[in-house]
Image (tube, rainbow, N blue to C red; front, side, top):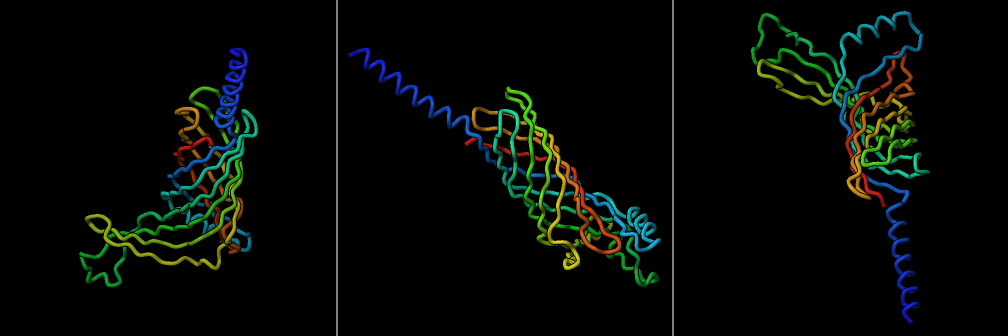
Length: 242
């Protein structure tokens, strides 16, 4: 009788451990992350005019990188102990801006001291992005390194500019204007690279810190001078193994 009881107890223990193991070793991880960084653009000429190069050089001298941000859902499926696929929808606010330039009065003989002294234009392009990345895991302890490469399909949601006016005491006014949305491609493709560092806080929870770079493989429009947006930033997220 004791032998049968021992066999039953061993069987139940094995089943419980097997169920718990299947949960812990799930191939799926889900989470959320935020992205902050800086964005800029590369101006591209279609070669239709010999003056395009001069115009591009002039515009490059007037522009600078601008802050970018975003966030989204992370979904990862482990193909093997080292390889995995990662995806998940992301919202991204990309763009660039001009340098601060002096504001010239229409009537220089009657300059209002309350007028702004300088201003700049911020260009915003808001996308819903869906990346597909291949990751390779290095390490087996609490800290694991997962470099990743892949592509992302980007759907343009909105495009606009924000004019900032600065006075003697700093920022004085903001003005938002719509960009020529109808001239822009609604869908673009970007190359994406990440250098993920994962810190495992237990069997299921992990933190993700990842420098990330994005570069649009397609120009934004079919105009004689167009642009490709590119960004560099830092992703911070948290993931849970199902």
